[in-house]
Length: 314
Image (cartoon, rainbow, N blue to C red; front, side, top):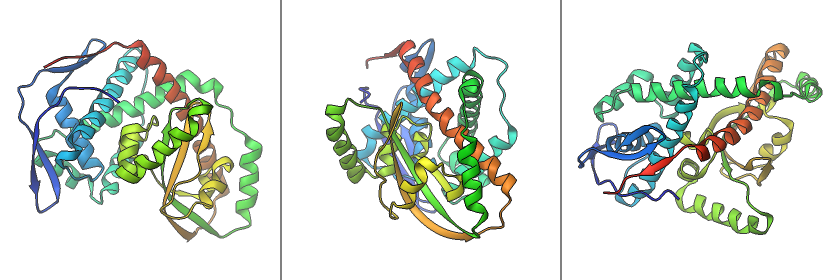
């Protein structure tokens, strides 16, 4: 757990949209430094507001400390990534990916982008906070691909097998799923850690627990992976997700750099006209993303340990 001093915040509600507005009752100052970068108390307040809005969460006093820990964790991660990104001035991101992520964030809370901008403005937030977060993640993804592109090996035989299976079907299942990735533990501590995770999810809800504890890049989104068709899911995970009831957690999946747990939030059957070439590209992209995400977690973990993080006392 991140041990930090308390920031006092009060709450006002916009009754028309049910999104909380937080006002900082503080004199701004440096809260923590990450390398040579300063995170101020107002940065933490703004990050709390952003987390609440983007995850459609309500605020209450009993959540204050947890929200602060989420915000500090998120800001530290963002700054560590930006320090590394700034060492590589050749990195670029795709504008379509940027716009697609904006649409996804707005869709997650059932809004269009313009409405989401207005929500941020109403809560005293500059919408560029979200835009910069997206840019940072896209540039980080470019960095990870550049660093590990030679280590990404796709099993084309498995891809071809999935394509052959898909050819014989017209109806496909889609899954609305979230993920949680926790750090690996020693075998003698595994059962107690999994019990802690189960209890934490039951007490706090999957989304809140993922925001606070997941080491995956999806943590800030509460682990949300959105709707995924069964054809886009790798063979290793598909049977586990297919056999997990709606509203339930999957059995733990042990990876090299962590323990993965899915939550299946919904399922539906769809009839789609199959484009095998498009499907093949989707499968390859999904497999690359899965591999690169693992490298991303381990790369960030190494960087985080090498960067000085200092908290300032009141």
